[in-house]
Image (cartoon, rainbow, N blue to C red):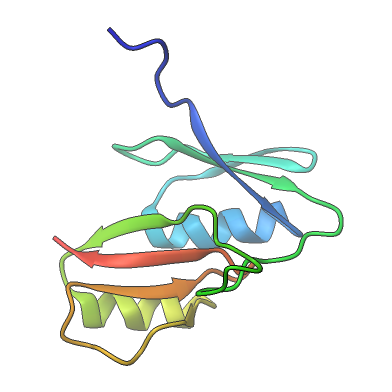
Length: 119
């Protein structure tokens, strides 16, 4: 038996409202804000939460000096269509060398790495 269950995955960022809107467009859900904290209840998944972090410094991928520490894997049916959508929403492609893989690496608008993964 487990001790706990995942309540939320929380991301530090400079603007929690903007980052919650980005992820709402990517994974669905409606952001619910309380000051500098925003919850995004993801349909069929754990809550993503965003908190303001003064002096936030984004991770760099790949970089041992500014490690990503964790990332989100987001499953998609059409990699090319999903890529166009996340780029239009403000994501940045971090790894464009091998387009034949079943995953691609991006940074969200606050610099957190995430992957689009073929299902």
